[in-house]
Image 1 (tube, rainbow, N blue to C red):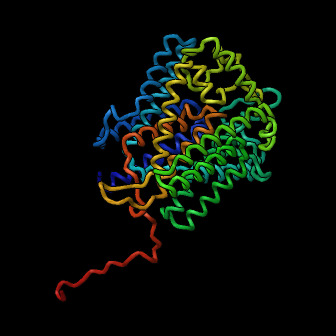
Image 2 (image 1 turned 120 degrees about the vertical axis):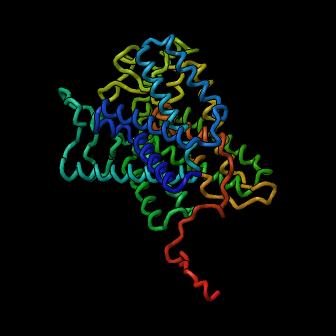
Image 3 (image 1 turned 90 degrees about the vertical axis):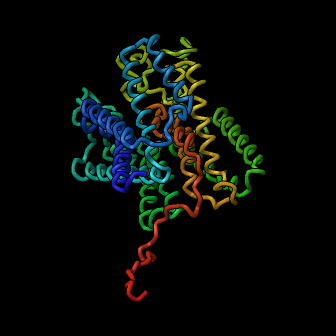
Length: 456
């Protein structure tokens, strides 16, 4: 390991990278697209330089999960049959840059450093988001557009506002991200990370409980149906982890049977009692226009079912077929609101068959990381570590979000997916409870006194 100053620099860079990738909407609203691109290039370039300087000993190209290569190669090849080649080139550059950044973070950070820096970044995002919403409500006192956004004629679509000035009305607030759904998902990730840190004793109780409360407040004031479902799924996933840990690896068959039955039951309920389920979540039976978007995406994907229309990541609403595909709230839709449909649309069935192993294999690896008991050599099993759970819970949240949003394919979603895929592929040593870097209260820190050697 490098010296402490180097690790401090690595940690600072990781925090900046996480804040930037989680808050890309905020950066664009603040600096416009030109400023955003300059910052993005600088961030990736700095990461590459840092990676080359540190030269992680365990890095080997063949240690990266092969589905990552398959997906990127297919996306690059799709440029040749794309209906929007320039936009496909831009989309591929963004995808590769995000992948490079994720690989850099996966190799220069340990699992504990990953948890700590992600936690710090989430604190900054949540804290600054509430400060921003408070500033809008106290001083602006009306919905706020990004400074570079031209005011459209007639009624301004709600989706254009950076903040809708709803903090004192109980929300839904949008935070710096300019979206209640995205900000709510940040709250969910934060809740996972903060609770794990608190339970593992990695932070002080006062600090831990304060930020858990802030994460819960974020969920309460965003009120996203997608995030609510993801929260329920994460809670159930946590229960399965606890169950699997308690019964041991030899008796886990009932865990897997119950999990499969539960997934089948939930799927059937959503398919055949859609109106009732969405009504409980406060949503219409068409999921706020998503079903209409999905129908149009499916119709378009069926025209090129095997290899799709070409990779673009974010939709380019100024070119066909996206220009005339769909609108919501008076503005062009920027995604299919379902990652799997988006992959089918852009890369076809082949793309789905490439993307699925990336997600499923990553989910399986972080599951076993969460439930398998750590060992060192041929010695006895060591106590479970709480910190081993967070990658699995985060992956569950990403998978559930992918059913109603396409965020897992871009920016922070793709970054977290690739980090978990890469990190769980090569760094599979399980943490143990006794090796956790626990936060010791200052009252319990021993005072080291120098002894006079003349009296020895």
